[in-house]
Length: 417
Ligand SMILES: *Cc1c(COP(=O)(O)O)cnc(C)c1O
Image (cartoon, rainbow, N blue to C red; front, side, top):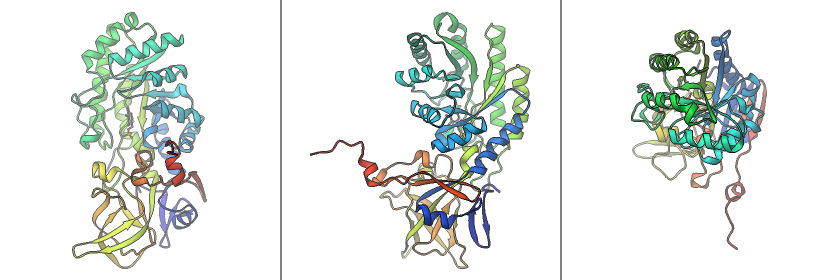
């Protein structure tokens, strides 16, 4: 269900109409294999839930940043949530509209701010007063007015992993409501080159219940209401991203359920609903396909050593995240093993003590639900080229990023003669 476009037919694993095994033969491994139908369906789930109400659905670029995937979302009509100048560049490169971008992050540089002002993004999600000063200065210099939404830290516990909780008062993100209020009230006089157009919360990631979203949105709504009385009215009500997906046995809220609970608050204020989903849109849209290099049997354990590592998919090492692992070809016999990568780190483990078909060298494994924060967090650690990315549409598989070569890895290094 969760990876509904990855199915098994007569023992053969498919991504839409493409055999995973054939894609692996064509493009090699490790390979990220994405389903376009899944990406579109997830976007349309939100469109459907928000139909008839003013809204803007932004795709959080950092979850999966390939320009071909951004292009797919742009064609659906998506806006984008960006966190760097590089991401804005990708959106523009993909044919996305910079004026549909909302820009978050605590450390925006002067150059990044100018680049975004120049491209007239929808708004900056402002995280501090010094940042607002910089935006004001950049807009003045460029002869423009920059739109902003202050990011309010609502002090809400999102009930998720501590590394992906962002809306508690001890987190580095956003402004405390009182500080934000002061800023809104003095903005027009103190920062004449910026215009307040919205307010935002973003409380974390992989949130499976609606309650924390509702708590955050209620606090935001109360804040906005009071602000209106004080003479500041805003257009965009931005609930951030963070809706969770199924990795194992989670039962996440649907977009319809989430929107049903939050939309009345936004409508009452006559505002435009904005969300910035990343993981929900793409997490279940891809598998990381890897080949078995060795089956290493020790006195204590069986280790299945695959050709993908923590440089390709960091989440298990970074967050102890769970990813289901399937054999691409079914086998009668099963065994209990640790599935590990080739990297020289003990944290380079995809799963411990899992029961999978008794694979052998050169068999293929699929590491499931790897579409979000998978390739986009990958690195060249251990001087390994980044994996290939392949996008499936129906019965066609298209290479959307070449596997990196040795040459690619040293290209930007100055050579010693
Ligand atoms: C990362 C991020 C998102 C997306 O989070 P998901 O959990 O992938 O939906 C949205 N908004 C902001 C500000 C973010 O930093």
